[in-house]
Image 1 (cartoon, helix red, strand yellow):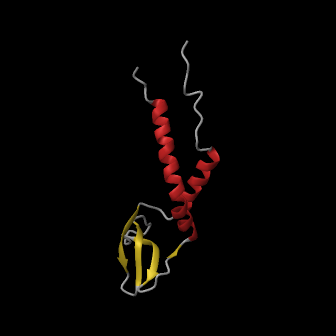
Image 2 (tube, rainbow, N blue to C red; image 1 turned 30 degrees about the vertical axis):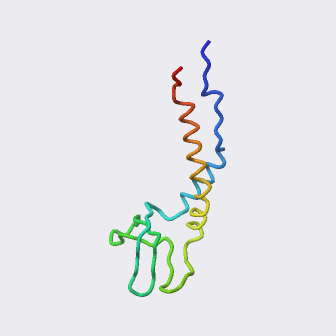
Image 3 (cartoon, helix red, strand yellow; image 1 turned 180 degrees about the horizontal axis):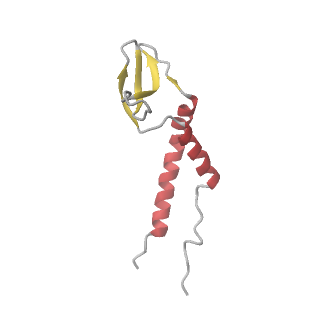
Length: 109
């Protein structure tokens, strides 16, 4: 008798979680994002930058900014939510991929 393991496998991540995570990603500033150095010459500084822009003249767009000498960082609320939640989401996704690889990989006996 052949047993299908895939029918018995239940995802550790629910569809509701995936939907919520997708919304966080969709609402955040478009990427790719990178860590870099941005200065506009008027005191505005940025370290977290986006390369995505509908304006062809814009190469980098700051996602999080501060004014020179000021430690307060300004960012869009949806970007902050995405950044904060990624600390939980990324490890969960890594664990899920590893779990699925174990299920999908034929075992050598």
